[in-house]
Length: 167
Image 1: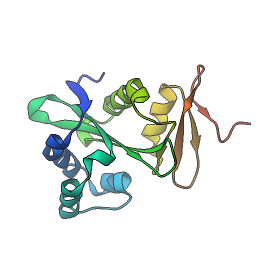
Image 2: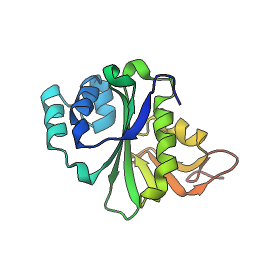
Image 3: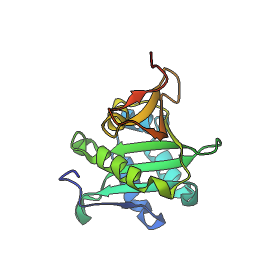
């Protein structure tokens, strides 16, 4: 686990304020990557306030009581049975330190708790692809959204495989 992280835990409604502060710390580009739109502060605050916690599963990476959340991973069930969207954000100052990888690895340890057979990442961020490679997960990368599909029913032993583009 990253030296920055003191704990990774499931977020609950009582963590709403910490989540809001984390998301407000993101730049316009980061917000676009996360939401597919550049949400202003007021829209982001409203999104957090109106969010239905029971529709998602949240993990938070904490860096001590004073530092708050340095990373957040959200799982959202989609209409297709067993397909869930994964959205992951890491505070800019904590990037490239293993925070995202630690949250993803924690999710993979807990994955049997959820009816998930596939994760999709709409924006296809290279960091998510790299995490899937490190965890040796089969994935499909494509130019249109969702740009990354991670098959959780197939774990490779020799490294990640792009199952859409095998030759």
